[in-house]
Amino acid sequence: MKTFQILICAILLAGPALTGCSGAKPTQALSAPGAVLWTFQTGEAVWSPPTVSDEVVYFGSDDKSAYAVDLHTHQLRWKFATGGIVRSRPAVADGVVFVSSDDGVLHALDAAAGTEKWQADLGSARMPVRGELGSGYDYQQSSPVVADEVVYVGSGSGEVDAFKAATGERLWQFMATTRVRSSPAVADGKLYIGDGNGNLYALDAATGVELWKAQGCDNPTPAVANGLVYCGSRGTLQEQAWDAATGEQRWRFAVGHSWIESSARIADGTLFVGSSDAATLFALDPQTGELKWRFGLIGDAWCSPAIANGVVYIGGYSSGADSDFYAVDATTGKLNWKLSIRNGVVSSPTVVDGIVYFGGMDGNLYAVQG
Image (cartoon, rainbow, N blue to C red; front, top):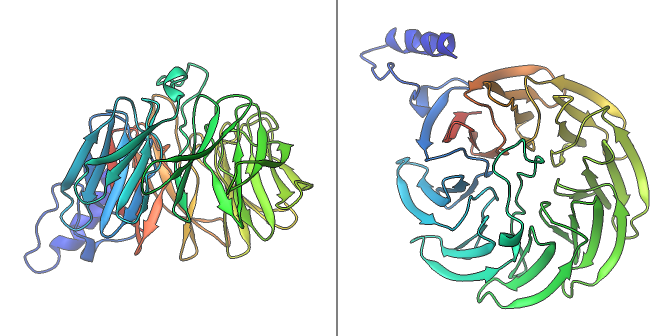
């Protein structure tokens, strides 16, 4: 990373009276792909995937806070203290930010001011996320999803809940067999979600009634496309596809002796998913599950990939060691660039207007030129 920064500074200093090369924050207009545009430091590791809406990036931190940071000034708009760590991805709809926390609560916050509009008890304070990775690797939180003015979320108590987004009124509750760290996927009037025992549920989004159940999805969030539901798991060591209407298995792809913590993403006729111990990003045919290419990472591929403009972005994590954040050609699987991050990356990236946003285990939110 140091060599890369020196190279950027040398290029800038060759021009007319340009300064600011002493730090790791080159200006956006003069930045090459992979250059750090700016960072925002929190008090603890950032596992939460960021959400960008109306020129603001929202995310959570292990310092038990949710943040709103201005994309242009890079300054804090507001910070909301919760009763527990925040590892979920915030959902933003109609001027409200929804974020679940390890305090067992779904918080609905005013997007402009950061004040709480309402909160709902998810019961997950009884089964909190364990902060240390050695304690069963139970580190994920279910992230809320908003569809048709309803917010859906799972919890560590095994609940899947639906609330009116405007008021917090609970519309229905479904009880899974154990904790729910998977996040809901809502499509065509159905909600798909996994639980810690590897059960993939298809629920009626309006009522919460179970439509079908299959085995093979635990912590990852299901992806729904092409009439299929895609998900992986720790238990099966496979990425699988099921018929979205019936739950019939269509294909399965074994990644070897490795968990799948990553949620699949589909773009331009390819399914992209990471695996942990295999430290690999896989590109699969979404109709057949056949391998197109694979790319090896330094560290576990726990976070979910993001795809934009023909590039796949994903981070690696190695406990107690630095790892890299990668940009990989989506067609060929060849490396475009990589960026070393202290303690690695678990936060899934978000790409907006060519800028890649993700959290680091070093406590920083990163904005990087894509």
